[in-house]
Image (cartoon, rainbow, N blue to C red; front, side):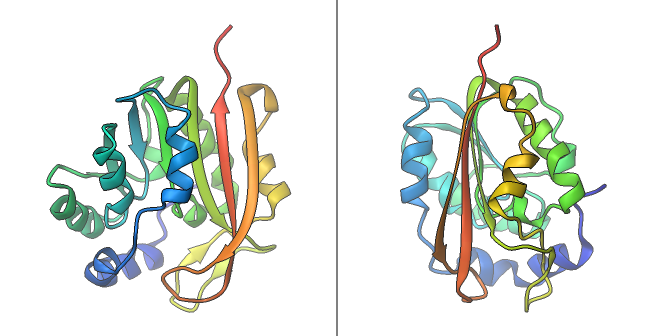
Length: 202
């Protein structure tokens, strides 16, 4: 199943300038524990970089960041912020193997259809080097659906998210914590934050 939802991508195409240019700070509280598990200069793939704020911060910290987004319009705006190319990449098109020390997926995999999510996490697992780190955040819920802006969300419970990561032996560790906040729609939101480390190869 494709992660390409025309209605969601259409929203980001129309709102790209406002979405990328909004007064959003980098997610320092989540970036800190993520990069703490990486070596200096580690290679990081960002999925769904949006306006590029998180990539900008990780670049500032000296990491080798590869920013990507599924929206060509958002990718162009992120390029203006970052001063470097931003790839246009849908989740199911990730084909690399043992290429990255970290994958940063803040508030993007939440747009993947529920049936497609385990396969997408498989692709991310394959793209990570042994011992590599994945951060991903999701809007919590019990049933998939669309928000008031028409965007698709998979709205997972913590148990469903853990199941999507697959057999535990693939991951040296997997922690999922929950907090409350908001998003672009300014609605109160429960968030799930997953931090996983790929198991070293034997």
